[in-house]
Image (cartoon, rainbow, N blue to C red; front, top):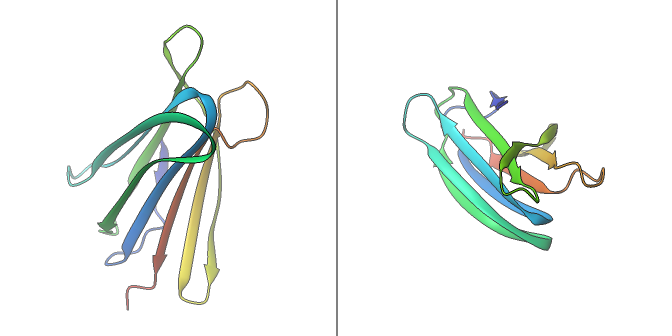
Length: 120
């Protein structure tokens, strides 16, 4: 099930970073219902391997993020997702979503970071 992101303020230039810490392939899809954004990032690797990065100008409308992994059976399965933030540090903001594929409980198999500064 996709996570809904409503925290990105209209006009903010948002950086999206996607990393993995898993030997199992991870897939992260990020999109909006307006058809302006539809990114798919995938890959596997240890030690915060970056599997994608993008920038966008937020519209103020909701976005969706879906996390999946390919286990030993080569079928895509939904990951368990937790979120933190947004964390506000002055005019800088960070929203983090982390996913677990069930082989341990460290919630770092796929990580998505949304960061932005106040748009005004």
